[in-house]
Length: 207
Image 1 (cartoon, rainbow, N blue to C red):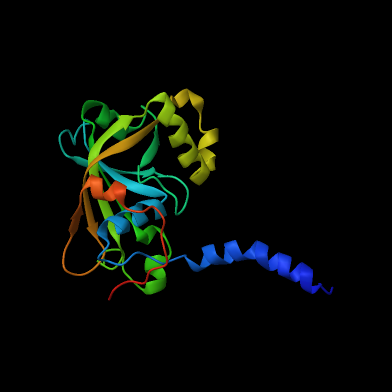
Image 2: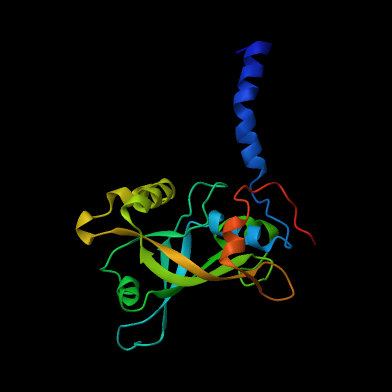
């Protein structure tokens, strides 16, 4: 089937945004832009490891790590706020009811970035972010934002049993650590983190 030059041009215009988005896959901020790197990793990840202080025997008072789905919003337009969809039936949620302090860890090993570049998940080059703070239930207004952020990334959540008393929560971030290159871990303040541009421009890594 032949296609006219006009039709081809129209088709190309429709495809350009998709091609541009595809070209950004795997492009990460330069290492020197630590706050943007933290935002990038958080926005790129669909799940996290959450560590709480256990309230369950035989681990009472000891660290307990668990996996949770997470979202800070749409790809490349995230808010930086790690939103969670939780049920009080879950052990970690029972922990935070007693002690809301928690840490979240996210890594680009979740994406294809590290695999494509041959980086082991433990390598400093396989960028990771550790966030600490307190887990809090969001208010009714923010719950709408959290629902949109989470259900777009995890549509299956809409079908989870309502009897489990699901609620939307977030991590109120107090500390941020970034490991994305050799030379040791770097810190970012919450103010620096949230003021970093959420747009992820095409930038190559500064080697």
